[in-house]
Length: 143
Image 1 (tube, helix red, strand yellow):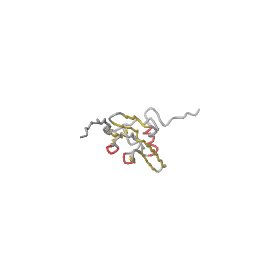
Image 2 (tube, one colour; image 1 turned 90 degrees about the vertical axis):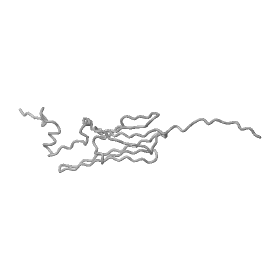
Image 3 (spheres, one colour; image 1 turned 45 degrees about the vertical axis):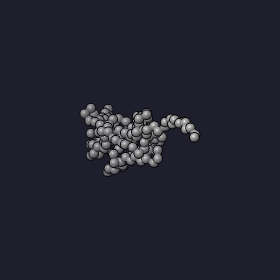
Image 4 (tube, one colour; image 1 turned 30 degrees about the vertical axis):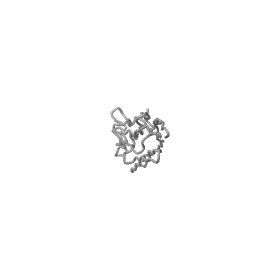
């Protein structure tokens, strides 16, 4: 009888197995991120669009910050990420591109972005002040 044994026993993790096979482990950049999913930036995370701000969040935990770009053209906000990995055993490339149209009342000149320790990219723009108002009509008597 032939017994097959998995290379992953109870004491060996996938990372350790890959390390043994390749000599290096190719872990995603963000150590605190949840790496159980292989959906790299497939979906847009939480979106807030209220009276005070517009913000959007992306999971970019599989990309180094230097491999990310944010570009604004008018109200079009484009977020891109590209990462290439080469080793003696092969080559891999992953990328994503998302485009969001900012609301008309978002202050595009004040957009800010930040990335958290778990690889969440937050992009935020405050809303512009409401410039509409009622203008009273004054009566002027002719002389």
